[in-house]
Length: 122
Image (cartoon, rainbow, N blue to C red; front, side):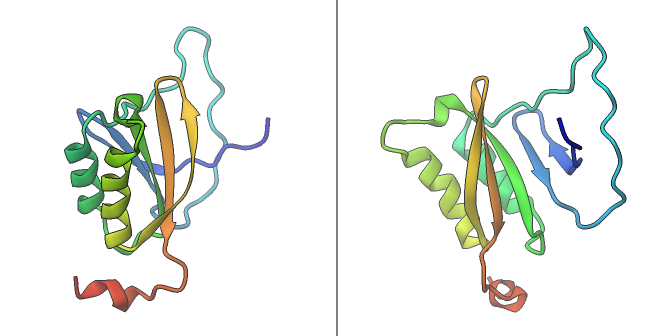
């Protein structure tokens, strides 16, 4: 496999969110030790907790990742629509997700063409 770029992260009792805090020195990820494994994200299992985490983020962030439990994946997508609406309102758009065991990691980036001042008044 290639190199892993580490991102800063905020973890709460429920849920995990990874945030890009800007440029920092690249470093190699430590090799996985058998039996110890890597720290696992704890995905958000409630819409309210995920929205609160997004609202707590600095509007200047360019991108972040949000781990969301599969229990929030209803067949109409209503719960993820609420979470995504919050991110869109704050100036980030979804750019994809990766399915993991029992949860998805959604990636959001600053809305293209949106200036920093445009979202500052909200």
